[in-house]
Length: 274
Image 1 (cartoon, rainbow, N blue to C red):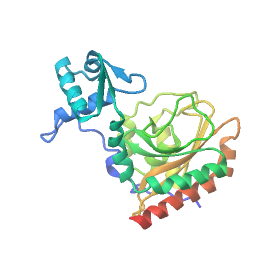
Image 2: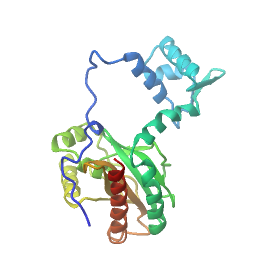
Image 3: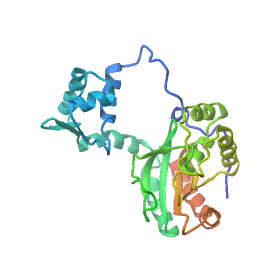
């Protein structure tokens, strides 16, 4: 029941490279505010004013104004010299998730799929050179990093990434791969651009992707597209497994049909809704 991915099946905004020079409509103060928010992450949950200024390239005075503005709006709190984000920051990401038509439709389908195959199941969208997780139903812990909603991984060496890249036209694909830092995460990682284009072309023909231990040793991932009413690929759904339990060939044989059925179910629900 595999379905090819035509080059036109693309949400264009997802892979357009950032403009090299801001135009007249570029609001620099707003961009700086976003940079301050992005300066906080799992490795730097609390930072001083000096830390934020260094991480963003802003002056201390500029970083201070933005931090105090975010604090006034409730997105940042301070304790002594340390600043941290507040739970209110989740409103920004939740607004995106609730705007996606498959958000509440896919979750129960993915839960059923995960229960059926006894493996983790996730959904992601393409953001330039990366995939961003928007849904996740974990079972076994199969990666050294913790994945959750909002986590990012490189598109070129992940199965969901290759499904989403396969939906781009050739020009957009070239632009995305040119912007991607192609380096080997494992000895199996394909980093040659032309070889990647061949693999992505194969994904486009067959309508699904399998990636065998290219992101992390022992991790195999199988993915299929989720489409909107117009047939455009809006997300990818995957099943992730451990190479010690199943080989790539065994995963395709056992899991491809249920994965494609689940992805098709979500696509049909999205089509009926929109």
